[in-house]
Length: 519
Image 1 (cartoon, rainbow, N blue to C red):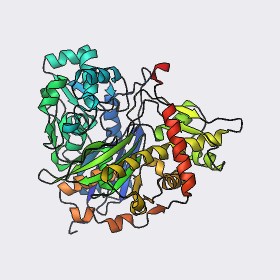
Image 2 (image 1 turned 90 degrees about the horizontal axis):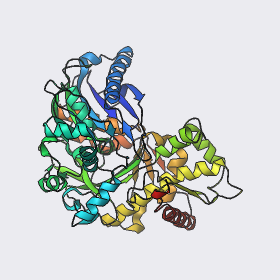
Image 3 (image 1 turned 180 degrees about the vertical axis):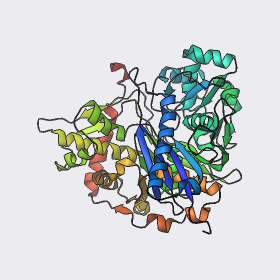
Image 4 (image 1 turned 120 degrees about the horizontal axis):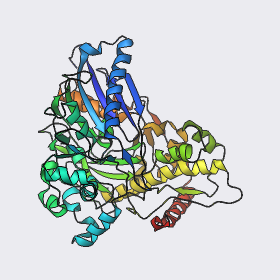
């Protein structure tokens, strides 16, 4: 790369439980970062909300402190920073006032299930039932997606009804809310989203990459509240006065799982799994949309420029992964920090016949059962906390396995050659070596953990740098360097034991169904 010496790209990584800002040098190495956690609100069972203003403040704090840290370490960020990218938790839904900039309700988080009754109503009313919109958007009717959350706000929040009537309402996922505020807010802030975030609303046509008129009409969602859709890598606008690094271009935007896919440089036929609050597995299917017959979602992988080809993906979303570990810590007090879980699980040789299905808010792919609830089964007088710890870790791996198996079935992969399939992994939970080895054992396929496991922010940085000429696609997709020094976990489990455990897991999953009415 023939670029000047001091060149940096920043990335906002706004997740489900925390916000980070990371600054990368021209070799894509992080040179400064800051992270803050923010509050999750649970006003009712199954409801999850965030405060939109707290999210904005967390971004401002992280930007300021990351720049201060990098500067203190001798990097001239003020002179060398060229652009920033943005990646965010997807589907989480906000509606705010165009004239005041004030949120009209708390952000309804992706895992929130308050829209279950709306889903059932639509399934009964629409001719195609649960899969009525799959042909256009690739997604089933589910509490997961933004369109249903918009409907709930339109039907239940007077301030939203009034604002829509007065044409003063703006809808956005978290990326849209951040960009609108970063570029000026009420002072001509830009109301945009990108193709990956738009693909998770249930409202965008996957082939045209535009809002689908027939879907909007069927759901009675007014098109004027929706943002403009842009690609993942282009100069969207500049940061306004009142923010750190005002005047800086925002030139990359992707939903978090798509950013991780780019950060893991997944080409056609390659898959990654991100282990965060949930677990999200994406398989790049190239420039063609593949409709799943095994409970997966068709979605956009990335589009690296306004005129660039669109890559698509099959996705399986697991609602509860790292959140189960957080529950052990905060809900049960069984551990004081996530790092303790591995040692606790290693204190026993096996799960002791204990299985855990973390269906706190139902089950996502490939089951799509919002009537499921969490179950521990297989307790005996011999069961101790080590067995519980191991069952929690294994539950994450079993859920990922269910999705990978569905991907193999949808893509027509030869099951006898699964050894050739490599799963790239990232996210905070992947520091747990037992989790990674268990994943390789249950999949019977190698698991590759890169040196930098925070590939979500890296993907946003790649998209931003590509748009302003810091990097070229050839450099980004040169996999040899990216996989150098990566940890590879190879399967060690005997096939008969693997099959027995998989069968036991499926039995446990079946026991979690039809339990939503217990509360």
